[in-house]
Image (spheres, rainbow, N blue to C red):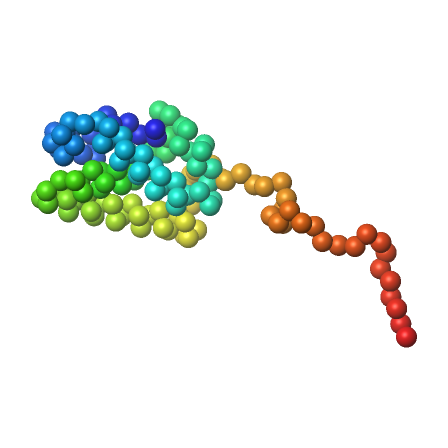
Length: 139
């Protein structure tokens, strides 16, 4: 996974995560996976998401890590009773989605690996043209 359950500590206190999930790390892992899938969906058209999410340690983009954590926290907090952390999580989730939309629209260009370019420059797999010389027929 791109982020670990331990790394969520910078976005959600451990005791909060434990209370919300009833100390079930599987719930944390499922929500982290869902957050990663959501971030991938925004970046896939322009960036090499397999390379981005295969990165480990300090090779990971720190801003993208924080945004992914904020989205994961939103998914986790949905399970809890409404209190103060709900509003903070919602604001951070909305900000993360706004940033991802701006990237997807080409308004922001984060330092991430570009998506691989296909061998066919037209992208269609079909080439057009003629096989002989041009005939000009004048009548």
